[in-house]
Amino acid sequence: MQEIEFKINGDYIELLALLKATGIAETGGHAKFIVEDEAIIRNGEIELRKRAKLIPGDIIEVGDEVKIVLS
Image 1 (cartoon, rainbow, N blue to C red):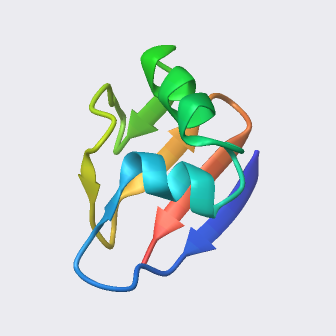
Image 2: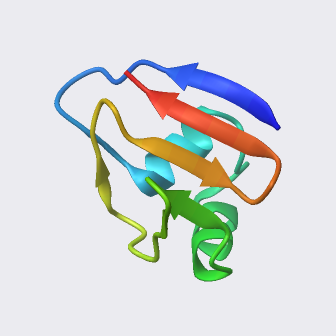
């Protein structure tokens, strides 16, 4: 599993914006599809909210391929 450390500028980043900023999703539509497909795990639980506000310390897993640690 590839691990990415992502630094947030501000208090939070929305899930769709994170997927685009890390290059996991090429477009907003692609990011929405990933979330709707229940492929996102946030701190051990499935995340279905497209605009979930992610904060430093959150760990996001995208399928079995990518783990993103927010700081």
